Amino acid sequence: MQHVEQRDELDRSSWCRPKLWLTRLESWLEGNLPTSVFILLAAGLLVRLWHASGTYLNPDEALHFFVANQTTWWGTYKESLILAHPPLLIFLLHLWRRLGTTELMLRLPSILMGLGGCWLAYRWLLLLVDEAVALTSLVFLLFLPSSIELSTEVRQYALLFGFSMAAGYLLELALRRNSVAAMLCSGLSLCLAIASHYSALLFALTLGLYALWRLREPDRPLQVFAAWEIGQIVALALSYFFYVTHLSQLGKLYGGVNAMRGFMGNEYLSNSYFVAGRINPVLFIFARTGGVLQYLFRQSLVGDLAYPILIVGLVQIFRHRAPARIGRPQLAFLLGFPFVANAAAALARAYPYGGTRHSFFLLPFATALVSAGLLTWRSARRELAGGALVALAVALFCNLVPAKRLPYLSRLNQRQQNMRAAIQFLRQRDHQAPIFTDNQSSLLLGVYLCDQRPVELNRNVLGFSSFECGSHRVIVANQFIFTARTFYDQWQLMIRQYRLAPNTPVWVTQMGWSTYLAFELSTFPQLQLHPYYFGNNLETFELKAGEKLPDPELLPTS
Image 1 (cartoon, rainbow, N blue to C red):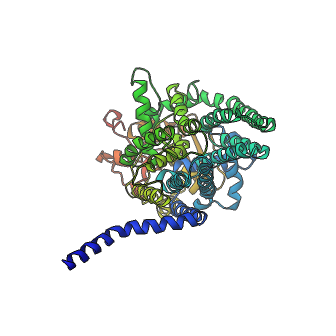
Image 2: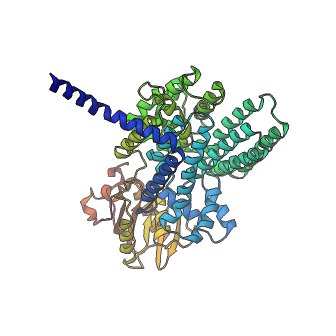
Image 3: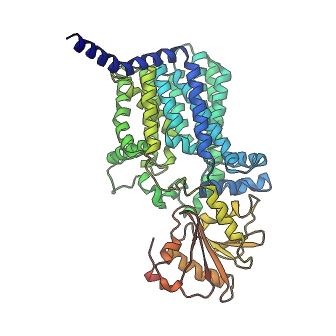
């Protein structure tokens, strides 16, 4: 009997050991919260440096460098007008390239801004909710795949994230301390966010309405309200400037429609805009909100599970069961209204709402609500350790089992060695043989074949452009990505427009997303293609001018 009691006691001790470890970790976190935040930020930096190393630029990254890599500031600005984004990142890259043009160096501004945005979001949440929710949200922000990816790419999203979080944090600081200086800095940060990405306008709407609500509180100094007004006026003026000089002009590229609606023609984003008659508006909002969470977690199952937890967090804020350091209606509005604003923009077909990076600005609000929902469960008991460990486990699972959403390049196929081998192969070909490529591939060739030097496009031939990389000539079709069917038309037209003599060798090259041309044409044995592959996303093969291609009606359509 005594042995049985001792065994039961040993079993209970073993069963309680994880709980003991959790209690010790909780005690350590409570006494060393700043140190734990520093450790998490250092780990987040290491993860981002690893993720940004060893891979060549994807086509979008190459496009931004291609545009920024001009000889003058004015030339840089003019080239930036072809992008559907404000010019701040392009100006930054134009200056930054003087420090180096390796992939890691070009991605470093995004890494620093993304990491800074995580820290600022944490500081902001500490002013809104308790430490447990703020710390749990910080873990999500640092380690979710979508945050890591977009803060390690040469894109606008890291700048948007960093400046938006600075604007929110400084606004809350200004409201708490009645600080004119903090309010002016918040306005400046908001302007920088707008100059980074146009989705900042939806964030600005949320922050503006929230600030008006808070500024109505009694005993608010007039100077603070005036400082906020100055920031809003400058932000509105900047937005109007971008509309007149950029968005209204960019819309002409899409047949005169609104520039943002131009994305409607893109299959990648077609589901992110509301189309009357195709889907019920309520169902559209419900489904697209789920898509947002699936993208932010980059894992469909986890995103679906996060959906009800997010709703629980929002409800618990209203029911006084979630921690809050400001008025609960105000907190619920601040964290929930960005989703309403984005959904409303999609219903108006002015901006996409769904499972793509275009809704990335919702990440801090989503993680805060999910964290609040998680920590209202009795098992978590609002503990620092419990919330942080759950968030870390979820983020780890999402990284190990991610959803592969298009456009997609695997890290294995995106290795720098693949690009170096492809470029070396092309440089060894006959210099008299032109390289024929589509638009996305030309961006990568312009960066790597030209050794990161500024490229001057020649648009003298109707329907095509060309540029020189050393002794190699690259001819670019007015087609973003070749398919077998579109290539047939472009090939025949290019031969005529450039007056290539029969049997002139041409190296057809594809680089980037959806590079299937060689595979599709290889289904026709009469062509006798011998493609060279460098991973799954870099390919080239030789065709001769005058060579008869198969009947286009027999070619695949995609």
